[in-house]
Structure formats: structure tokens, C-alpha cells
Image (cartoon, rainbow, N blue to C red):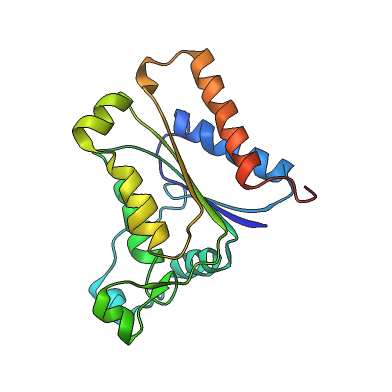
Length: 200
């Protein structure tokens, strides 16, 4: 399977990066075609221009590459920290520039009127791993878990990917090495569940 893995974190020593390494290693072990993108390493420009927005196209070869790969992806994995209840700005810009009309979704005349798009992504599953320093109870009771809404409803369901899984790991700042290893084991389990070995 062609799997797109998108990482949004500037620090290669972070636990987020360890999640990404584990993810890619398990996917490779399972025999998948992995397209890994470290957005900060690539110097991905998250700012969409007025011209690009109006024309629904980009002359930037990196943007064209990402668009082509996300169209071809049979699975999508997003990895990032929780910053202010949102993905980092570089990843929000990736959504703006890549999950675009004609690539990830479209509207016909009927759907334009009721605001319900036709999803164009063919990925069979989307998985999101994120880290947080907010306790889960507070995240749910005070903030309402906005990342679940963003990724599940506003992005993947909107673009036609109904099989969705998200796992939050935290509190990272207080975690022990044993806890972090346990979390990485959970990452491996999730990858094996959603993107198993090709012969299974």
C-alpha cells in the first residue's frame, strides 16, 4: 500500500519525532510504500497565496508532489503536537495547500447548496498521532478535544475517508522512559492494525 506519513514538528529530539520513526519503521517492515514528509525538514511553505487560492493550482513543485501523493495514498498518517488545541501552523498550512478542491474534495451543484462535499481521497484509513501536555480529563471537559473534531470531521470525513483513528499521548512533559516506550508500543500496535503486513 502507498502510505503518506506527514510529520509536523521542528525538533528531531522530540517524542513526536520518535513516533514518526516508529511509524515509518513498522510500515517499512510491513512492506508498504512509504512517502514520509517532515514538513520542517522540507521547508514547506504553509502560506497560500491569493493567486493560488483563486486559481486552485500551484506552480510550486513541492506542493504539486504533495497533492499527487495524497491523491494516490491508500493510507494517511499525520503526526504532530497539540499546540493551542490545533496542529502547528506549518501543518495547518499543509491542509490549506494540499487538501484542496479537485484534490481532496469537490462540490457539484447539489452538494454546493447543502454544503456537503464529495470526498475525493481514496485512502482506506487515516490515522492521527498527537502529543499533549494537557491532561486528558481537562482536554475533554474544558476544551472539548478540538483535534478530534478537526481531523475526524473537518478534514478526513469531509474528504471521504471514513475509517479514522486518533491517539493522543500525554502528559509528555511528565512522562517516564517506561511510559514513552509503552506509547511507542501502542503506535506499533495501531499501525499493525490499520496497515498490516501485505500478505496478511
